[in-house]
Length: 382
Image (cartoon, rainbow, N blue to C red; front, side, top):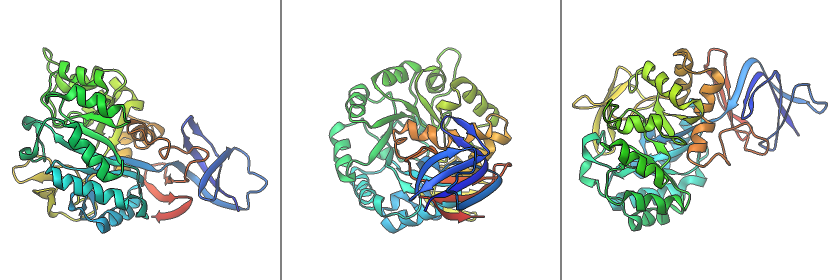
């Protein structure tokens, strides 16, 4: 039996349409029609509301007291279920800098667990590090930093079952160009961050194939009128995507708007960089090996530096609309299709495309999440 979703607006890949009806058959999107189809016997009526693709979080370390680096399959499953309350239907579990052995073990666990989660879908793994430099280490342990090594990466990739979709590094490390060229040929996305690189270093890495800047502005050399640095490179280099944390703490709304205006909404990937305290009360938590204090809507190391976030992706899309730097359609695209494209997983998620799994969200006109659907089934509802 076919089900049809009725709503005022649908944020399609080609633009906003509606009011109308979107077909779902056996958990898969069908066609959209403005008129009520003759076979429309089962209708999900969301009159006065909007339908968007399920959100795609491509940089997230943890949620609901579970951390990817715990190396715990059950924790990943619980994290996957809980993310549905954030409107997230696909994500990339994100690692932190650690030992070669620990990262191999985590990669193997995620690889074994990815097809067993029952909530938000694991569409790959994001390795944030360990090929960084110390000045902008953030909440990464510098004792594990090193130059990129293709043999080590291949070891992790083999352990994951080929699931690593993205890896971040600092462009000023030795051997970056050769490493980037090698792994991008295999379809792995290279991101640049936690770096004191010059603009020229960043340009060289991008010319070699790097295509994403990690949580832009944060943990990277800032913009200077004589040396544009990493921020200048992110703003001016063509055909690169910029991750952006829009919680109002990591990046000032005006700075976020400046980046969006410079890059265009189709090259900004909203991410959370959320750690295990996301969805939890204030208190003391861990981010990898570091103690973190959560209060006043931030997660900070003991010395006061930001340590990931407790942002939910549903909040990020509302924030950029409230800040008047994106329309609702643009905001949803920045948290679904753009991150999916940036990590080369847009063949599986990120849009209301015919033939794709019917993963979608229902939004009010004030950008509040009302429901999350996975494979055409309502899995979260306010």
